[in-house]
Structure formats: C-alpha cells, structure tokens
Length: 200
Image (cartoon, rainbow, N blue to C red; front, side):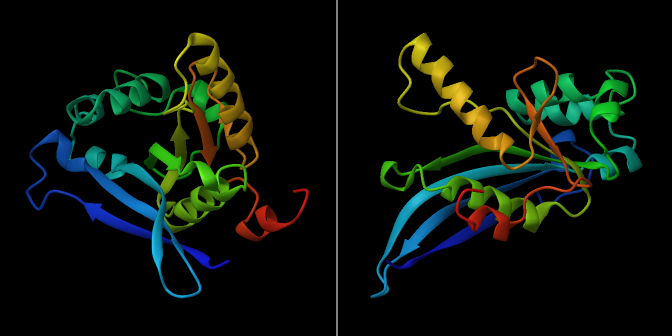
C-alpha cells in the first residue's frame, strides 16, 4: 500500500528589490508514492507562485509590473483581481472574498499520474500546500484547466467543468466569469481530515 509524501523546493532571487520579478516566490515540487519496502515513484508534480504583494506595496513597486514581468498567468491574475491604478483588490473581489492578508498564492500546475487520479489525492495535496503557504496570503487563486488528455474543444470543456467541480470541494469559488477560482484563507474550508472521510 505505502504512503505519499510531498517534496517542495523554493526559488527566489537573492537580490535587492529593484526589479519587479523579485517579488514573486516559486514553489515547485513532486508528489511521491513510497512503497512499504521504501521504493519511491513520482505520483505527481506541482508549481505554486507567491506574489509578495504586501512587500511590493511597501517598496512602492507597481504590482502590475511585478505580475507582468513574471508570466502571462500572473498578468491575467492581476487583471482579474486588482485595480489597474492602485494595485488594490477590486471592490467586487473584496465583496465576494474576505481578503484580510496582502499576498497572493497562485496555483500554476497540479498534475497526477493516471493511476492516482480519482482518489481525491489532488485535493489532499492542494489542501496541504495551502496549509503550508497560506500564512500572510489573503487569496489562493487557480484557473482549472486540463493540462493533458484534452485534444478537442469538447474534451477541454468537459475537463474544465470536471476540474471546477473538483476545486469547489475545497471551497474555491468562481471569480465572476473569468475562468479563475479563488479561496479566501480567512473563510472556513474543509480541513485535511474532512477530505479523508468517506462521502465527504
């Protein structure tokens, strides 16, 4: 039977805060299945970004430039969540989500090997990653989209619907009709133990 472990590495520039992309931290890692005999096999992988929004504002760094310099994903996140002038959360976002902390945690990728899908493993991994990194983050954001196995528009549509239902089980809610889903870290959401219960 064995068990699962998460390995996670952190990447951030060791440099002064004079460049916009110095305000983004990357967390990348693997989900590892460990057999009873000690043999290990990769069961999945993930990538998260932490946007140090609070620190960027302290340094008077333009938050749009922070996100735009990093990636298209963070550019899109900024456009959906933030006021283009001030970098503050949009009023609509503040109404729908309690954003009590400044930073953003953005899920870029979470994929599992085919044999480990359908077992809620992805939810358990995401729950543990949020528990680990949520301190100081007001929102956790993702854009549910099938990363593999969807070759036709219909397969993409079905995969997207399935993944949206999946993340809703953890408490994520849609950010309007943008395709992004967000989770407020100040709101009560299913705990790791809750996700282990049959029928939960």
